[in-house]
Image 1 (spheres, protein in one colour):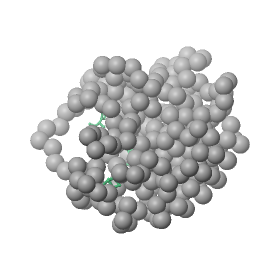
Image 2: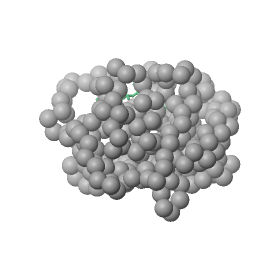
Image 3: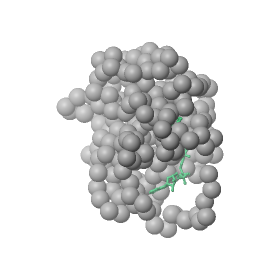
Length: 244
Ligand SMILES: Cc1cc2nc3c(=O)[nH]c(=O)nc-3n(C[C@H](O)[C@H](O)[C@H](O)COP(=O)(O)OP(=O)(O)OC[C@H]3O[C@@H](n4cnc5c(N)ncnc54)[C@H](O)[C@@H]3O)c2cc1C
Ligand code: SF4
């Protein structure tokens, strides 16, 4: 990948956290390190930030950038002409796929790498961009024949702020290959509100995945190499629901 121009966003994207009893506002330029220690931030998001990357990366990486990070799929990163790059097939579906998806993987089997996105999905966060307001869930889309994008952002559209409702209880659990500095094989965010528990998963689909309940795991469509993730997800979802 190459770029002809780098744009500095720090002066236009807000940074900082402001809370009330029911809603916390987060500037999209706030770092993961700032979020993981702030008591105004719900536990699920603090834990997801603390479980991401390394201390050095969390000190620099912003929540806005984290939500928009590119897939880790090695075929995509190596420039294979795969479906996501505009080609006609997914190389992972017939190739190396251990870290790939178990949901939404018909055309592209990549696994979304953001821990905070799963937490924010469980929280039902709202995003404000320079053009509109939208639920976090509507930031993402599965790629289609006509449009291979994984997000609904327009060219040049900036995420400015997130609004996060306060849950009664919440938790983030993450399975990874190492105990530190590893992307999620499966991450589960759970948040309990007055009307029930919401679940958001990372590492299981090309986009952060909202799970209606543990029973939806029966409808997973794993590849031969990712079947083990369904069992991990079952265990983490059970523990997360118990915890909240
Ligand atoms: C080795 C390594 C391990 C990692 N492990 C994890 C992990 O376990 N879990 C996890 O969740 N993350 C992980 N990450 C990702 C890391 O947390 C992100 O790279 C970081 O949060 C991105 O933030 P950034 O501000 O540097 O974004 P950038 O890299 O600067 O931006 C990413 C993309 O978003 C765009 N962008 C940035 N801000 C905005 C905005 N406000 N509005 C619109 N577009 C914007 C940029 O143009 C770019 O396309 C890892 C990264 C590395 C390199
Ligand atoms: S998983 Fe997606 S990114 Fe990876 S090879 Fe398949 S189409 Fe490309």
